[in-house]
Every structure is written in structure tokens, then in C-alpha cells.
Length: 315
Length: 239
Ligand SMILES: Nc1ncnc2c1ncn2[C@@H]1O[C@H](COP(=O)(O)OP(=O)(O)OP(=O)(O)O)[C@@H](O)[C@H]1O
Ligand SMILES: [Mg+2]
Image (cartoon, rainbow over all chains, first blue to last red; front, side, top):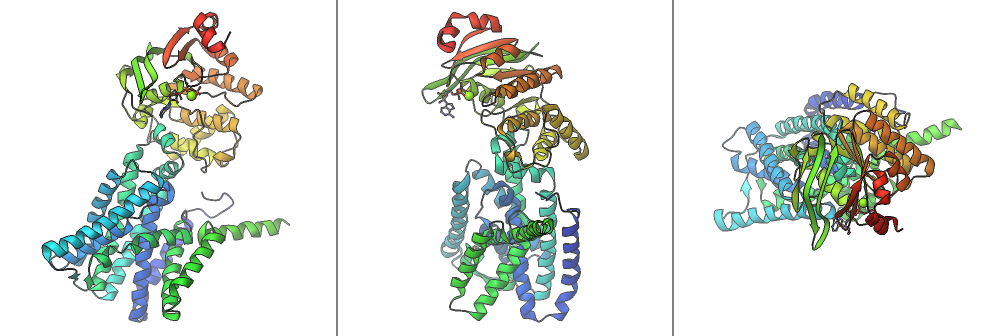
């Protein structure tokens, strides 16, 4: 939890950070080449996925691998309804669809703990991917669809808004009594139940809330790919990356999650262009190194530094 | 007045009757002890009362309402709290966070943060843990972890408190302090039902004692009656 030696109030950092992001982000696109905007959109997408994932899985230690399902259903909502609905309505509906799907996943996995929950959520995402594929092959007889395209700048502003909403949600949940209760669930579900917390309701609701902006982001990003099919929309990578990014940056700090998502997106981008042949190898080595040497992620680095500084100052 | 009353409470684990047809009651303001050899079904009975496990059959009335089959959080909200035989704290959270949560979600619920904080320091002082607010719970000694668990249970504002082997693993000084604490809690108006193996302690504080063996109630009475009861002597005290 927040260190007691830190004199700045704990709302200061997120406030300043989001302020800077808003100002910078709002004016920046005019001055940037399209390529950079596209890559910023990618970063935004992963920030939304990572921070959303950590809203539930961070404190409760229920490692979900269903992010791809929530992101993918948003993509599909946008692909199916994009040409009959306005952009904003498609985004909202993507978020809603994702919320409802997460409610269902949450309800059906209530009794599962630890590894079983993780495997269940992964299996369910895969099931959804294959069901949609089966549907397209056997019922509609067209695999994949075209998505109404929206220009990069609009996507950029939509993603920026979703990022800010995600951060606001994560921040408020984390600092509310429900955030504390989610942490308690990660420690002892039985004890949490016995002090008056409706554990099942809280778990399901937090899980569903964490899916809303994943779906909204999916609906938004879909317009950028112009063509989607089940293997693009429900790519398991969308489930694994948020977990890696959160661990890489620091699961228990929102700023850590942001740093993790940003750093790994940029890293992947850089490695892919500079070392197309060793890309995966290098990426893997860096991941393993960070997890080995910084078990608290990059956010842990800052805490280590400040501990170390104090240590030196005392001497 | 009977604050808690169980009738025909049964719990089977497969073929094993952990609790077989137990009738019992607790009067308001009493301290009642629950004793019995290892595996007698004491913790199982507590688990049934607090909603941890579902009963096979029977009824448990708390303040006139059948609570058997309710969820632990529903039972907590009705004013019944407990501690665990093996302490179940929120280990990586601070001492005060452990208590704050119980204030926020316990019987009164919807407590304001500043009130909860005041209540938390009051409770820490009450159980003898003042000044440990910021300490990570799992870094406390076992005796202090047990105190914290009691404080957390009290923070939910219970009318009936179940204590599962509060004294186990404590040294004689700590046992004396724990005994004192139990009496203080009752003085503040909370009824107590406690499991204990430390005979001297339980005989000293209890108004009444219930003895279980193989899931059955074998005896019930004042501490004096229990110590002279023939069956209890044979089975439990081994005399
Ligand atoms: N969840 C469970 N599943 C199967 N059997 C159980 C379960 N819980 C308890 N039992 C069995 O029920 C019996 C009673 O156990 P219980 O824990 O209630 O005993 P106890 O009186 O609290 O003993 P102790 O003094 O050792 O704490 C034991 O035989 C135990 O093995
Ligand atoms: Mg026991």
C-alpha cells in the first residue's frame, strides 16, 4: 500500500499525470506523422487492456485470461453494427456487450480458484473464438468482415477518452472500500465474507466493470483494422499481453501498469523493426530479466531507489 | 433471552457425522465454552453457525430468525462475528486496514471513513495493539495476530462473538491477557461462545460449558458440574 514516508498526498500523482496526458494528448496529433499516431493508438489500447485487467486480477490474484474475449466482442459489435450505428453508439454498445459477457463468465466461474480460474477463462475465450468461426463458416458462410473505417485522428481521440475513463475507474475503485475489499479477497476469501462483504457479488461486478473499457477499446480499434476475423479479434495475445505488461510495470500501481503497457508496446515495435529475425528472442529475454530482477515490476524499481537513497542518506 | 439456539443440527462429511443432532442454546450476555477432544466437531459447529459450510439438516435461530443456510456476510450483517482456529487475517494489509474493512462492511455498514478510523484506533487500544496501525498484519506475533482478529471481528459490531481457540499457542501471560480481554468484551455487551482446550482458562471465564464428543453433545453445565461429570472425565479429561 502507499508508503508512509511519502509526503505527497496519494491523489497528487495521478492528478498531475492525467492532467499532463490530457493537455499533451489533446494538442499532439496535429504535429505528428500518421505513423506515430497509429503507434500511440496501440499504446492506448494496451493501457486500457492492462489497467482494466489489473482492476480485478491485480488485487484479487484471480489471473484472468479472458481479456481477448472482452476485447474481441467489442471488435465484433463494431464490425457488425458499425455501418448502421454512429461511431460513438458502436463504442458504447461494445462496452456493454463486454460487460454482459464478463457477468456471464464471472457467474459461471464463481467456484473456481487459482489455476482453475485461469484455465477456465482462457478456455472460454478460445471457445468463443471457435464458436464465432464455426458460425461464420457454417451459417453466414463468409469468414471475416469489413469494418467501416474511421480516420486515425478520430480513433485517437476516442482511444484517449477511453484511456482516461479507464484510469478514472481504476483509480476510484482502488481507493474505495470496494478496492480494499478486493485486496482482502486476494488474501482470504473466507475472512472477507465473514466481515460482511458479499464476496461473490463483488467479484462478479468488479470483473464485469473491468471488461467494459476493454470492449469499448475493441469497438474503437476495430475501425482501424478495416478487416477482421475471429483469429484477429479474439487473438489470445490480447489475453496474455495485459498480464505481462502489468507484471512488467508493477501490478499494484496504476502508474506501473501504464509504464508497463507503454514500455512493452514500444519495445515490441522497436524490436520488430530493428531486429525482425530475433524479435521474439530478444523480447523474451528482456521480459524474463525484468521479472527475475524486479519482482515488483518497473514500479518496484522506483521504490527500491527511494529505499536505497534513504539508506545512503542515513549513512 | 436466548440469542442463539440450535436444534437437531447435523453435518455429514461423506459418512462421517462431524456434528450429529446437536441441540444447544446461548443466552444473551453469557460466556459459553465449547470443549471436546480433537475432531469432536467443535469447529464444524462454529462453521455451521457462521455460515462457512452448509448444514445437512437442523435449524439455528439467531435472535429469533433461522440463519442456517445463510451466507457468512449475511450472518455477519445480522450481528454475529467469529475468529478462526488458524488465524485468517489479511496478511499483507496493514493492521488498520484489516479493521477499517470490517467497519465499512460489518453490521452497521456505510460507516464514514473518519468514523471508521476513530473506531479502529479505539478497538486497537481495547485489544492492546495501540500504535500498530501501520504495521503489516502478518508481521505481528501470533498473540498479536489473534488480538487483531478479535478486533476485526468486534469492528463488525457483533452481538454474538464466536472465538475458536483464542488461547491456543499463547504463553501463560498471554493466556491471562486473553482471558481478561474476553471478560472485557462481555462487559461491553457482547455475548461469547468460545472453543478452548486450555482448561484452566475456559473453566475460569465460562458461565456454562458444552462438551462435544464424536459430534454429539455429551454433557452441559456449569464449570463445576463439567469437571465432576463422569463421562467428560472419562473421555476428555482422561481421569
Ligand atoms: N471440510 C471437511 N471435510 C471433511 N471432513 C471434515 C471437514 N471439516 C472437518 N472434518 C472432519 O470432521 C470432524 C470434526 O472436525 P472439527 O474440525 O470440527 O473438530 P474440532 O472439534 O474443531 O477439533 P480440533 O480440536 O482439532 O480443532 C473431524 O473428523 C474432521 O476430520
Ligand atoms: Mg477446531
